[in-house]
Length: 84
Image (tube, rainbow, N blue to C red; front, side, top):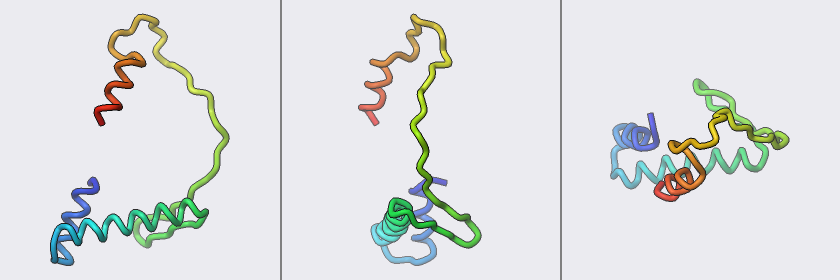
């Protein structure tokens, strides 16, 4: 299930317009993110308990040891990310 599916489900239950359902879903997500950013714990019965934790930075490591890999290099990754 993705955000669009969730909006469709909310629209099916509350009726109204899809724009109103989208606004409701957006507000829920914004509220959860805001609470987590402020250090609060979010508990939703039947779904779970969510909390944000600080972790120290980790050093990334490359698992692909081939030096001349044409399938995934920095420039192709950057261009793929720019398209998203």
